[in-house]
Structure formats: structure tokens, C-alpha cells
Amino acid sequence: MHIVIFITAPNKKEARKIASGLVKNKLVPCVNIIDKIESIFFWDKKINRAKEVLLIAKSRKDKFKKIVKFVKANHSYQVPEIICLPIVSGLASYLRWMDDYLR
Image (tube, rainbow, N blue to C red; front, side):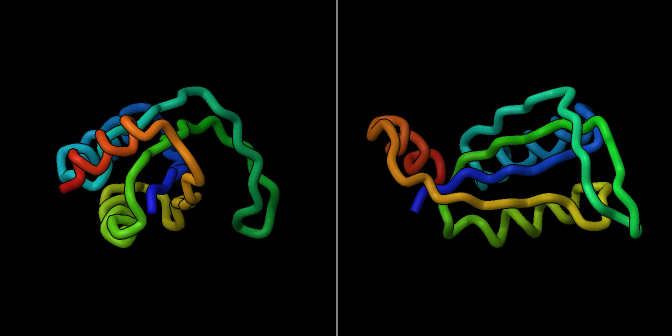
């Protein structure tokens, strides 16, 4: 099963480090980095606001545990956002390209 993973990071430098490592380690074939998102979240018993960077990674479900392990080891947050969603459908040639890279 193909998946999309959302990961937030505190800044572009850390986002690039995580994205590059995920691709170099063949855990994902592609990561999009979206800068300057605003997050509102509950942490430390209060509502917080932060400027963050969103990573959108594409992979396969069989790689997810290794992706989580890599992100946790390379992320500055105590509890990083790592959310996995299934890809229900997609361009067949794109999905084949993903599979070819992840072999």
C-alpha cells in the first residue's frame, strides 16, 4: 500500500535534513517541503502557536516503521507529528516510479 506522511518541523533547516535523510536512506522517493505554515496546538497544558514547516513524504506502508524511527532520531521535538494516510489511487506510472526507487 502506498502512503503519504505528514511531518512538521520547527524550521526549514531541520525539514531539509529530515527530508534529505529519508530520501538518501531509500525510505521515501520524494518529500515536498512547505514553508511558513502556522500551527495552533495544545501542549504543556496550554494552547500554543508556532511557525512551522510541513513535510509531505510519499512511500509505502512497509517502510513506515523505519520512517518513524528515522524521524524521531533526527527531530528536535519531543513528540513530532508523523501522520500516515493511505493513497487510495494515483497515476500508475508515478506509483511504479515510487516502487522502483524503494526496492
